[in-house]
Length: 256
Image (cartoon, rainbow, N blue to C red; front, side, top):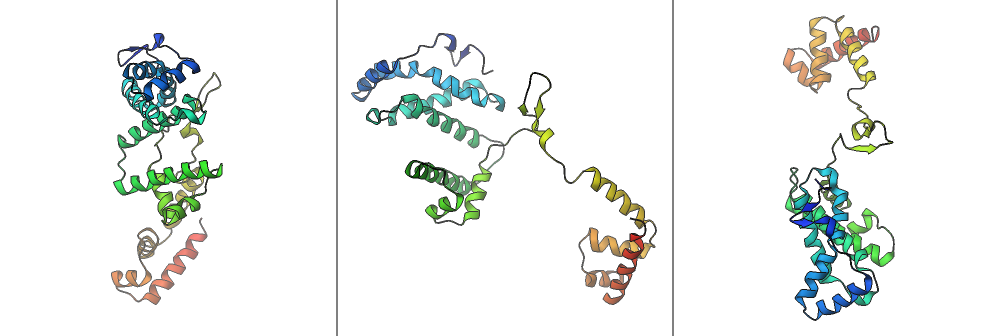
């Protein structure tokens, strides 16, 4: 979808490019209120939007939608760009376009995040950007939390909640042959061979217990009951439960 020639009625193969001198000249006219210069500047930077949305090509999003959102980011960049800073417009605009697309993807995600978490996350990202510009290095979560006057765990939770989900079938490496996907790099701790064999061993060992011993161990270790709760349920004392449990475990150890 991203590679198609026409996006939102725009023939991407014929998009113009502007030199830095042309951009500077147009910007002076834009600041003076020249709408024609503004339109020409936007049209001359659509290739920038096109290059940014390539980064999001694996999301399955409609290319036209991403392009329109990217254009909003481009326009915001034009409105806020300061020519006196001696920075190339593209250097300033790309993060603005990326930010606008990411906000769109977060707001339209099938995973719903509460408004309060979104607010904390957005404020944290703003503080992070300010501290990076101020100190020329990435701030720690603790520093961000201090600036926001919030607990560190709240900031971590909010930022994690806003992280973009990733598909298990997204390729992480491709050498021209078969691709390696995210799922190939994720270890399944729960269903490993070791736990599978362990479960078989425990089930086989429990077959050597009588029904009451099986019932006690099931309540204690599979249903999370206390010895007192088990005692009340089956009508014996806690001391008897403790003794029966200990004997049953000792019996099982012979077979595990």
